[in-house]
Length: 385
Image (cartoon, rainbow, N blue to C red; front, side, top):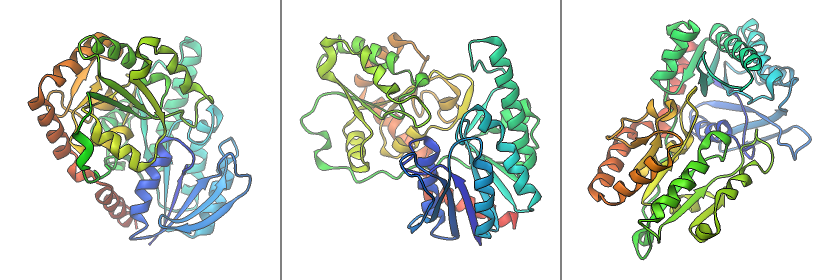
């Protein structure tokens, strides 16, 4: 069986690229895989290479003309199944997003079985832009693209039950076309012997530093937390998203006042081993978001779920669709720094609760390792043939 995947690919820094690299590395172990990927900004030509993730053909750039390059390249692979990753702004700006259904229609006319993974489902009543007129047209575009994806695809993959429900109830999607395959979870590394010795309290946050991340609220909550635990440290791992303005993430550092500079560390992006060490050294992991209209899975959660660490998260669909408050995490209202600070303090004071939350989280996600998720994809491809 030959499979062709269409996606962004590292070193491009977005969630879909990181997701795809993990997923297709596993799928390539069992099927003949070609990845039709984007050309990085620093690379001005197409490039094909063979590696552990299958063949990677870099042949398209983000922008309005991506459809032609992708379609012609996919046909040359003679794949039996085409799997496209979809994220808003993944293939370019507003115009490029609207053109995605035309790419699907090309594949439909070629009679190739086509699977689309929707990484984000946007609610119909979303407030995407503050201007009401602009927001209206944006919502109409979202409605058009979402319905076309369901119409033109043979199967649509979403990551959780809430995403499926919204496609059914708000976008009139055919339930038989929608398949739930969870976001893959990274297996934890072996716990280092030195991870618990001779250190103070460490709060860890990780992920892309974006506008809706709630980093400013986290820093404000940490200031209040320091009043009770003055020797604590806050480590913020991550950097700018590829689709944001250059240097956008640097603005979050302005929220750090001189009196806490030594206790708040922005690491930027780190390598895999360094991230593993930071996760093991943390006492609590905070996953923040302020987005009530975007329903998706959390890549940051997938990176830490298998480590058995207690998690504090925001009460937004991104996490509510995955967590049960009080069982797998403690959930707080978005942008409420006082509640967040109090929740962090209560967890530090209750070791039994920390251990129970971490254990329950690990148990709930143990069936979602990347190898198992890849197997679900392979079974889906086979079913289409």
